[in-house]
Image (cartoon, rainbow, N blue to C red):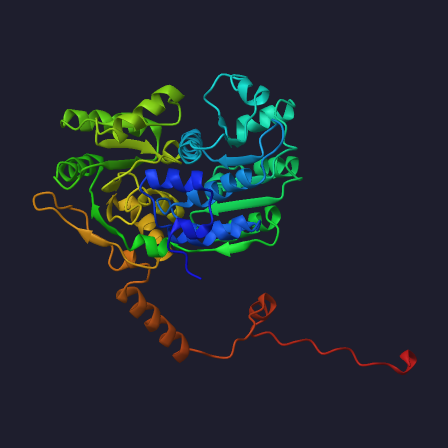
Length: 442
C-alpha cells in the first residue's frame, strides 16, 4: 500500500497537528517507507540524501513510540540519536522540539563546543530524547555521568560521514553500552561501498533496507559543469565573475584548507562580495553566528572546508562552487548535495586547474556521467584540456596506440626460449666428452 498522507501512518494527533502547522501533509519517499517499518519495531538501514526528509523519517516513529509507551516515572533518556557534528545535532534537536511541541516530551543535546559538565541538566532531569555527538557523549559514559541502560532506540544519522570522520570505534562502543535497546535506525546518504554495509551488519539486527530516493536520482536535479583555470589568480577571477550573476542567490563555496578560507574571503570582500565562513578552529558561538547570517539572508555566500560544513542545513542554496576540487568522489557528492534539496533544482560548478584533471576524471567515473566544460568570453584558459580523459575513459589516440602495439606483438610472436647465462658464455665451445668407464670400475 502506498502512503500518500501523514494521517495514514496512524500517528498521534499531537504529532499530526505539529506537522500541519509546518505545512507538511504528504510524506516524502523515504518517510513513506521508513516510518511504517520503524513503527513495527524493525531495525532500518536507510539511504537518503540530504533534503529528502530523513530526519522526520526517524524522529516521528521515535516520538510515536514514546507516546505509545509512556513511562510511569522520570528517568534517563529512552531515545539516543548520534550525529557527526554539533550543528547537525542542534538542528535535529530543534526539529524534534518542533514536532513534539504539543506533547510533554523533553529533548536535550550533548555536544562538544560546550564547557565540560555544562550538560549537567541532562543527567539530573527527565529527558526523553538526547541528540549527541560521539566524542563528548563517550566522555560522559566512561565517567559514568550518562546512563545508557534506559535507551530503547539508537539512531545513527549520516552514518557514512561518521565513518569518514573515523568514529566507527566510538559508535560501536556506544552501541555496546546500549545493548539492551530494542531497535536501531541507521541512515546514510548512500549505501554504496563495502564499509557502510560491513558496519551496518555489526550494528543492526535483520534490518529492512530502504533506498527510497537513491543519490543518483537526486543528482539529476542538480546541473553540473566545470571551468578550466590556469592558476589561482585565474580561478579567483572566474569565481568572482560567476558569483556576481543574478541567478546566484545563495551559494556555498568549498575549499580544502582553513588557510584558503581566509584568503578567499579576503579576495571576495575586495570584489564587493560579503561572506560568512566556517573552518575547523572556529569556536561554536562564531560557527552558529556564521550559519545564522546566511540562513537569515544577511549574507548570501558561505565559504567552508569539508569538515566544517558537515551537517549544516541551509535552505534554498542555489549554487555550490568547488573552488578547490575534492580529493574523493564521495566528498564531491556530499558537497553538491547542499543544493537541489527538497525537490528543488540546483547548480554545482567546479573550477579545475591542470593538477585537478585526475580528480575530475575520478569523479566522472564514480558518478558514471561526464561533466561538461564551459568557458567565459574574455576569461578563456590558456592551458590545453586533456583529450577525452575527463569522461573517465582512454582517448581515441591512446586506444589506437594500444591496438597498434597489440597487433605488432601478434606479428612478432615467436616461441619463447629461455636464455641462460651459461649458454651465452659457452657459445662456440665444444663440450668435453666424458671419460670412458674402465673394467675395474665395474
